[in-house]
Image (cartoon, rainbow, N blue to C red; front, top):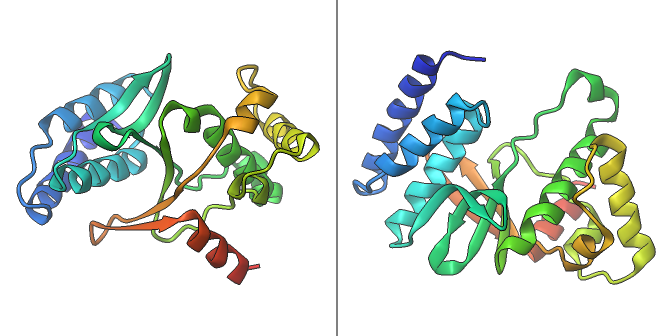
Length: 205
């Protein structure tokens, strides 16, 4: 784990650029919460960088934004309260132990995030770095009620993750409105709704 000082140095450097880029938005509350959660071992600089840029983007539009926001005893990476929008960050990390089944592993992790967090808000997005197209399973892109297909999602999740808090009803209620692409170098944001994401995904098949 990187030292706390290195994390603070990096996040403050990024914050300075972000504040200048987004019209001097106030980010002190966001920065301090990210530092607190880094100290607890719950986040890293990659994850926090996206949270910080997204916070600045939505704050610049006049929204109230919270990071590591607790709702129904779960933590959302980012919550935009005015829009009742929850956002989870997915960076595409693959452990060495899953190098030979990388795509399936990522589908499992993204499915877990969608089932676990999407019901906490009326709108739900996955935020990713701009170089990454997340492999969201087809079953979660459209409104599917078929229990057999929903059980496949649960099986996929449990294949890679030991979890007992995700049930069939979570799969029935799960939703995703789209993905948010974050260019960390240029500090730019692109919001892609789920229908456009599906077109993009189909193009890469």
